[in-house]
Length: 404
Image 1 (cartoon, rainbow, N blue to C red):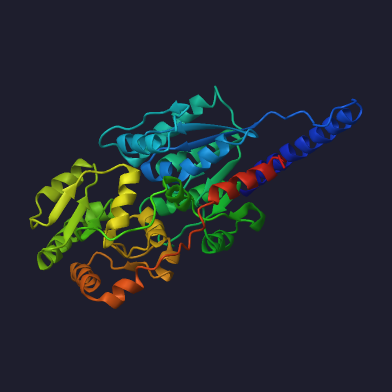
Image 2 (image 1 turned 60 degrees about the horizontal axis):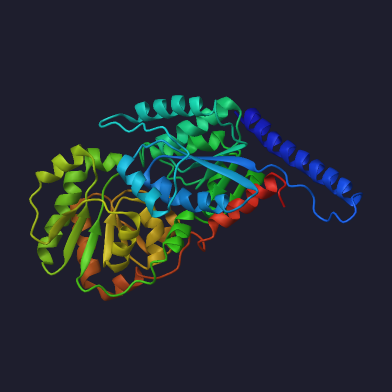
């Protein structure tokens, strides 16, 4: 694998050398033409961004928009539709129209089915559009299959949000292993933090291929321009649960624990944003909940940010919320045993509470009754960058292709 990755890195360097030579030749010709001051423009570098889930779309949107604004790049978007309605909502939020849609979403399909459909569908699309570089994100079946397809085609791969690790192969499942697989394929690694970079170096990735950019989730918040949090008219707590390992093994105890805590605090609403999965809905429908435990359908990204901005705190297993919480100054109780985003824990906004009912109830009670603890977990300041990760990515790609 390393020799092939080195080959793709060499390909990027060869493209850069060719463009340097082209610039030099243009400059030489221009110098002999009276009155000509500018060199001829090279054809734009073709970038294909591939994603398929709501979190990917949120985090890839700033990169796509930034590259589309730059005439040095031709950025096209291929979506898989791994999350159908949820994906489409984010595309609307950012006014992004895909150039190609694999439309792989089917009820009840496995990760293997998604990955297989993406691999075949994307390979067929590459017969009609061959990019100079493929951009993939994070840890999904779509991203993993896209990276593998690019590898088979000899297309260099750049991995956005690279290097996140728990060190536990099945936690989160299957995302932890997906990230590692993409790292073995990728030629450029856009790590969100120094810690993520250190993880990649520990796995033998060459330093020259890793660039710390910050996390594009902070760019997305900035682009939404939602303003600073303000005191809500009614106190409420947001609850989400979507990780496969929690849905399969811990959903009942997590929701039951929150419902039990809700009984202690009738003046506080607990708003559970339910996952679209029929399995989840069936399980939750059997759990008795008090009147102040509300079930809400998934909402558009901007509305979700507004909800987060006004809430007391969040109870979640989401990776994205761990990134967004410090930027919004909100506490998070994380219903997982480990996190690939330790920076959020170090910042003080995220507390790992696991799935033990007693621990979940105790932690909810503490945040609602202990003002010092609450203030300590409500600090502003993102450890995931300044909201300009997409600019950093565009600059690196421009340098790789000798566009500067």
